[in-house]
Image (tube, rainbow, N blue to C red; front, side, top):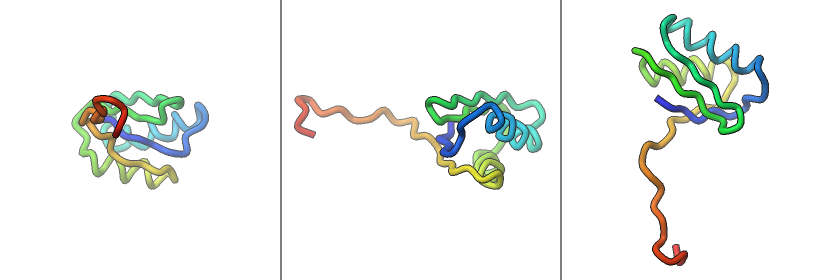
Length: 77
């Protein structure tokens, strides 16, 4: 799953989020991208639980849409 997370700024944030997710699933693979403001989690963790754990640490979080954005054919929107 991939989540958009607001408020991350440094390696300390990476550690906090990783620790929060691994408290639920110690075997989860957590990849935090500070520039893209995303967290990718691989493992058997429920999305709602992951989001709640991240929110509990003070970050804004929402699921990332998996749908491709629609493109206008000629820029007319």
